[in-house]
Image 1: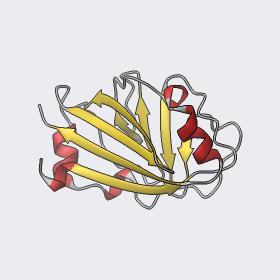
Image 2 (image 1 turned 30 degrees about the vertical axis):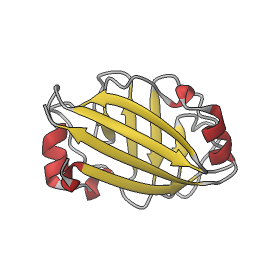
Image 3 (image 1 turned 180 degrees about the vertical axis):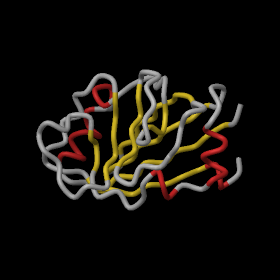
Length: 143
């Protein structure tokens, strides 16, 4: 697989990480997290969708594209697979959102995900709540 079809985002956990949301999962570039952010797994992301390579974006703009998100922190790994969508813009400059639904906005990096924040391994969530460094690796397998 070509390196231009992989995007890596580094971020950090936060004491308010609960990962209880049942339909979304998010990495944010914000430097804060309130208890209401129950879909956010990590903050202070070093990259946002607007930073992604155009070849990655093009590959993701197809219903048949398979997108895999690998979340790693403190030795724990969780993987979520979903698909692309023709309406992806990757223009957001704040956050990456993985969705179980087909809803698309400028933050969406995956639709039809097989899981959301509430499905993430609880040991991984605990590590993020303790402030562990996190990596989100997005890979696309074009249609």
